Amino acid sequence: MTVEPVLVADRVTIGYGERAIVTDATLSVAAGERIALVGPNGAGKSTLLRALTGLLTPRAGTIRLCGSPIGPLGQRAVARAIAVVPELAQLPFEMLVEEVVALGRLPHEPPLTGLRATDRLAVDAAIERVGVEHLRGRDARELSMGERQLVFIAVAVAQSAPILILDEPTAHLDIRHQVETMELLVDLNERDGTTIVAVLHDLALAAHFFPRIVVMVDGRIVADGPPATTLDGEAIRSVFGVDPALVRLPIGSG
Amino acid sequence: MSAGLASKPLGSATRASRIRGRPGLVALVTVCILGALLLAGVALGSVAIAPGDTLAVVGHRLFGVDLASAVSPATDTIVWELRLPRVLTSMVIGCGLAVAGATFQGLLRNPLADPFVLGTASGAALGAAIAILLPVTVAVLAFGLLHAFAFSGALLAAYLVFRLGGSGGAGGLTRLLLTGYAVGSILAAGLTLAMYVSGSDLRQIFSFLLGGLAGASWPRLLVATPLILGASVAMTWRARSLDGMLLGDQAARHLGVDLRRERGLLLALASLATAAGVAISGLIGFVGLVVPHVIRLLVGPGARRVLPLSGLAGAALLAAADIVARLVGDVPVGVVMALLGAPFFLFLLRRTRTGYEL
Image 1: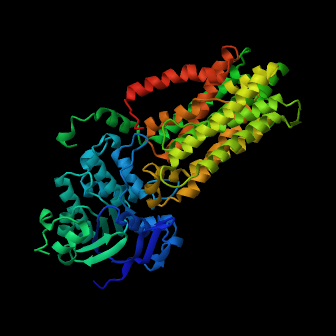
Image 2 (image 1 turned 60 degrees about the vertical axis):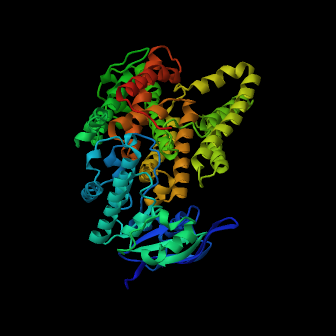
Image 3 (image 1 turned 90 degrees about the vertical axis):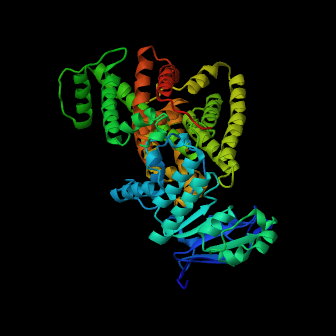
């Protein structure tokens, strides 16, 4: 693709204190791309995502959102451009599912009056799109982990930002919901043009649903490209330290 | 609704959603109750005063119009100097405590939080106790050492907790809460010591701890009102940030909330509203804990609704409790509040089957 990059990490090093968690990582995300970030635990994937969304300031290098450094943009401007699926947090109070999803409109709605008609439409659209219509009216704290995960994805979808970032979106889902979530991401990407960056643990899902795979090991990006080259048997053995026969990837088709 | 989910307890949710989305109605009802309480608060007491006489006094004092000719000077004094400032003070303080309570609960993501959770109560109490023990009397415009020390004690304690507890990093909220508890314990030890050595002043310290509105007066009300209502309005103004914090710190930032700034600002405002109220009335518990929960049951968790409606309802609750306290012979209003309010809250909790995740 030769589209203008919307999100760029340029030779980024991130660390807490002395220890560097991400070292010299360069990643360029073009508008409309669908990227899976994979790698063993502790490889720095989530840390890189946090820097990409402006939550962490890199020790060296820069993050650019649509060409301008992300730091001075301000949290609200970033939130309009990048939606991040929230971590599964405990809710302190009773909240209906639609009230939770409506939180995704915070970066857009006027600060005092709250939801406008357009915001309500976006909330309804997100609920329908993610397929959690049947959960309306339920207390979000009563939901199963999988249902809650879908509701939180709906929060990010309601944010209607051009970039959607997910950190292990399928962690709490059963196989059917995993596949449905992946299909939703593909749909958001292909139909709406939403740029998607997702950290995934399941290599099969990543290889099947994502045309571009970025592999991280020990804080460095070691491979970046289509699954056929980044997730071949040799890579799986060296990166993840497992017998490739254990991970049957649908690479032949890609 | 899909049939597969019908077995889940949908009843409570649908009942809640029927009232939800009508904050205007709740506001209207609460304002009507407030008006009725204002009239009742002036009318009821050791001497009953007809509503007509009340209007006459207020009309005369405020606008110089004589609505009724025969209002005795005693009635005039009771209405204007005693009861009216007291009722209004109870409303202003109740409003401030309830808004501060809602803010603390949202900020700390903790349904058990109240305005006193971060040390303001023990700070104010220690300040008041020191002022009572000091053999100095200073009075500037109806304000004595007690008010100044209680006010600054509350603010200092909150500031100390915020500085020591920090605001960032993982587990930041737990650290803040535990710091509040630790600082509160140190201050409480100081208070116990002060009470131990207080001798004949013990009763005065004790009455501060129980809280009451006998000290209400126009000058005090006029100084406290802009502080409390100003802080309450400002908190409501920032309520959007509280909404963002409902899903956790990271989610708040991803939703565009400048977490560090907003948390500091809201903590300062909530502490200010609490300190200004407590300096006049002493420690009045319960309002700040319970009112926000009742409002959330009615209109949902959105802070932009919860904060202003909590303010109105808190004003009504404290005013009502103070009327009862006066009628049964000037018992401390905090006692009335706990005796009447807590059973009502228990009833609500049972009815709504709400469960908190802690």
